[in-house]
Structures are given as structure tokens and as C-alpha cells.
Length: 453
Image: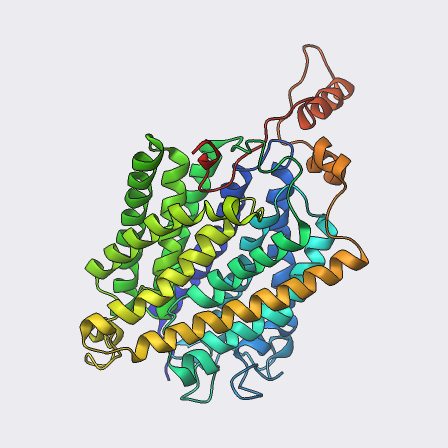
């Protein structure tokens, strides 16, 4: 098939947009942790970009998108080192190398999402080891299951089963959310949680991060059309309206429950909407996207409180927003999918959900995909985390946690205040004081401020 310059340009731009989401996530998470942990959170995300990029070239793309090697479970080694990806090899109307670059950005942000579940208490070296192992045995296979299409000979979820996941509700968000839950259980609770109130240290940073995520998400969803076409257009519009509806729904829930709508709630609601519309953006109509957003905003606003009832310390609500939001968006396809959208490139010949005359068949397929990804990711993530914890140790000491992981692990602090006339020595003295105040007020996670309710 002939390479199309417009499609190629759109996917290159989308790749850059998706990459921007990881720094956006770093700011989003960074604003929600304590002042003495913000640099560690930023570094966990930025370092993930470095590690996953290298692994993707070495073998990640091949395992994810190489020709199927075993029953729809994993790719072969055809593209190890990105061999055989010349500028003439194509994926539709774009160079295969461009498609590889686009999918790399998905591989980066998925493990980065997990970091929010273990904020304030994970050893940086252990985190990096976990990321390397996790993307190899969890993300790369699941990406093959969901995203690899080869005329019925590709991944078992997307190509063979026929479950719909346009941009990663299962492969990215349920995958990361289940892993976040597993690691939160392996590492245990932060010292003082839930009695202490862990509130965000910098809400403007949270809003900045949410804005960057929203902006980059257009590449995430609309770029998944892998062409500048009508499918990309509907994914773009659905992304916007679902996110807007979820933001409003979360604020309404906050107002009714707590008496006040918050900026943190607005940011959290927007992210919940982005998560839920990800799998459904090329399956539902714009009105359906609004329904998806309302459902995600309301359900996730409720779900972030489950950790207090169930007793697991998911620091920044990766479970409540990404796992639950991913489940909502993936399952709602079984109800709201319409052939007018799913068949937009096939003259309306596409699957429909229950409310559009499609019966329960698509909902069944969506349920199988959700359960399979959730179970595989949770079990493997728990095993990987447990092995790391029992060997090199995954959690920092209680003393280091109280002092502040930025100072003890990275010898830095996020905010430097210099005394009048002070030089380097004064700066060091004061930075140590800032990084480890005598009684620091901890930060609360996404969805938060809910401790008071």
C-alpha cells in the first residue's frame, strides 16, 4: 500500500502528543504527593521514558507487533533491534517505523501510570527493575493480545475474539490499574495512612499536569486511527466531550457529597473521562461519549473511596481512576457501540452494542477481555513485586520515608529557599530543612480531599 504523507504526518504528531502525556502525568502525580516526595515522583516517570524506549527497540516492538508466534499470545522476534523496519515497510499508509514510534509512547506511559499507586515509599532502583521486568512479561504480551491485527492471525483479544479497545482501555488502563493494586498490596501502607491527611502539596501543578494529559490524549485516541480520516475525527470529538462530561459529573458528586466542588475534583474527573473514553472513542456516538463521561466521572468519584473501606493504600488512586475507569469504558462498549461508528470505514458494517440492536454478544467479548487482562496483570505484577521485595527490597525504610525520599534517595529538594547573603552552604542547609520539615503535612491522592468525608 502506498505511503500517504498526510497520514504519516498525523501519526508523527500524535506520537509527540502521546510522549508529552508522560511528563504531564509526572506533574499531575507530582503535585499530589508531599513536598518531600515530588522529585522522586517526577523521576520515576521520566526515567521510565528512558528505560522503556531502549527495551522497545531491543525487543519490545517485536514481541508486541511481530507476526504471531503462539496462538495470539506473543509476537515473534522478526523485528528485534527494529531490524527489517525500513522506510519502505508499511502499516497501512504509513511507514512501519512510524507506527513503531507511536506504539512506543503507549509502552512508556503504561508503567508510568503504576507509579502513582506506590508514591512516597518505593526504592528508585527497585522501581526501575520492576518496570523493566513488567513491560517485558506483562505489557508487551498484552499489547500483542489487544493491538496486533493480522486478518484473524494476530492477538487473541482484538483480532481473534473481536473485543473492541480502540486505544488502550484494557491494554493500558486496566493493565496499569491492576498492577498498581498489586504493588500497593506488596509494599503496604504509608506510615500514618489513613489517620493522617495526605493532601496535595501543589494543586496548580496538578491542574497543569491534567491539562497536558488532556492535550496529549488527542494523539493517544485520535492517533490510534493510524490515519487522518473520519475515524480519527470521531475519536477526537468523543475524547473532548467525554472528558468534559466526566469533569462535570465528578464536580456534581463532590458538591452533593462534600458540599464543595474542588479543583482536584475537576482534574480527577477529567482524567477519569479520558481513561473511560479511550477504549470506546471509535465505538460510540458523541452523545454516547457524553454518557460514557458521566458514568466514568460519577463512578470513579465513588470508587476512589474504596481504598479506605478495603484497607489498601493506593496513594494517588490509580485503582479508582485507571482500573475502574478502564473497566467502565471497556464494558460500556457492549451497550453503546453503534455500527454507524464502528463501521465508519466499512459503510456502516461494524458491531453494535445491546442498546443498538447488537444483543449481548459484544458485551460478552468485552467482559472476557476485561477479566483476562485484569487477572493476568494483577497476578504477574504481584509475583514480580514480591520477588523484588524479598530479594533487594522494594520499600524504603521508615526513617527515610519520614525524612523524605527526595533527600534520602536523590540528595535533592524540589523547592530551594536561600537565606539572605547565603551561598552554597546556606542553600544546602535550608534545602535540607525544606525537604524534611519537623512535621510535614502529607499530600492526598487523586480523587482526594475525601478523607474528611
